[in-house]
Image (cartoon, rainbow, N blue to C red; front, side, top):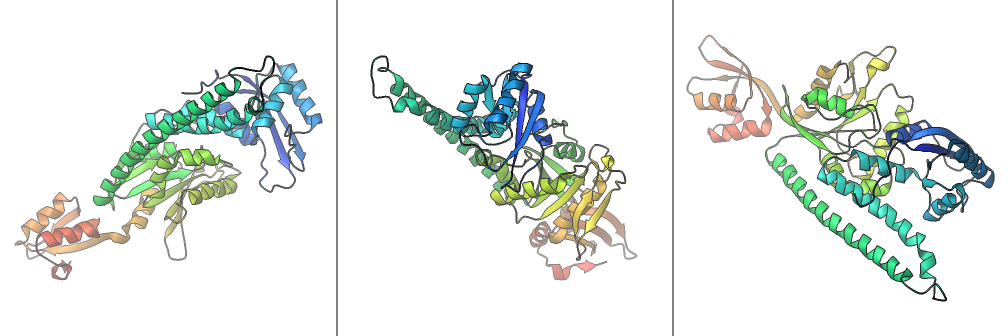
Length: 429
C-alpha cells in the first residue's frame, strides 16, 4: 500500500452529529460497527445536533471541549467523525485534540485497505486512497505556496510540494492504467459469457446483509463470510447449475452503505460493472434489520449511480431465522412473477424457493416442453442429450422416444438448424 495503515486496536472516540436541515439523519449504531470493523476500540460516542457544520471545527466550541476532555481522560489515539470533513477541518481538529482525526470516508477507506485480497482490489483501494489524500496534501500545504522567501523560509518548501504532487499524479496515472487493463480483461470475459449465452446473476445489497453466506450456500464455494461490515471486497464468480435454466454465473460483489463516498464508487467501477451488465440482480436484504427500508433505498441509490437500476431485480429477504415468525416463501406481483423470496442462507432454509424464483425469471427464453422424437431422428435426440436438455425420457406405444426438455430457446433453435428441422416439424407429446 502507498499509504500505510496504522496498527488496529486503537482507542477511539466517535462523533455523530445530527443536522436540522438534513433529512437523512441516522443514529450512530452503524458508525460504531464501522469503527469496530476497522479494528478500533470505541470508548465513547459523542452525539449532538446543530443547524449546520461549523466551518472551522465542524462542531461548536463547547462540543469540541467535550471531545477534548474525553480524549485526554481515555487517552484516545484517534477521533472518528461520522461525516465528511474538509482538509482544513481535519487539520484544525487535530491541532486542538492532539491526536489523529479521521472522517467517514477515511474510515471506510481504511476498512477497504484491510479487506482487499486480490491484486485488483488492492489497486482500487490504493487509487481511492491516493485521490482522497491528494486533496489533503494540496490544501494542507497551501501555506507553503504563499511563502515568498525570507530568513529561514527559503529552500525546498515549494519544491517539495511540487514533488509530492508529481509523485501522486504519476502513481494515480500508473494505477489507472493497470486498472484499465483489468477492466479490459473483465470485458473480454463478459463478452465470452454473452456469446455462450450463459446468464449472469449478481448478488447486491447492503453490507453485512448475508450475500457471501448466500453465495457459499448456493454454489458450495468457500468465500470469506463474517458478521462484519465489508467482509467481501473483491468480486467472486462461480458457475451454478440450475435444474430448469442450466448453467449460470453467480457473482458476489462488495456491499453498499449509506453515504458511500463517490470516489469509492468510481474507483470500483470495473468491479461494479459486473452488476451493471448482469441478466438478473439478487438484492439481498437483512430482513431482521430495523433499518432495512433505509438500507434498500441506499442500495438502489448506488445501483442508479452505476446504471443498474433498470435491470430485472429479485429481492432476497435473508436472515428470517432472526425473525419471530419467519417462514420461507415467495411473494409475487399481480402478474404472478416472483418479486421477493424470504429465506435464511445460514440455516439453508428457502434456498430451493430462491432457485425456483430465479428459474421463473430467467425462463422467458427457455423451452420447457415434451416432444416426440421418431426413431429416424436419432441425431436430433443425441444432440439434445449432449446439450443436457433432456430431463426425462419415456417411450410411447409406437416405440418413439418421448423427451421432456428444458433448454434455452436459442440453443434449441441452433440444434434444429443443425439437423435441418424447424419447430413446426416437432410433434408435441
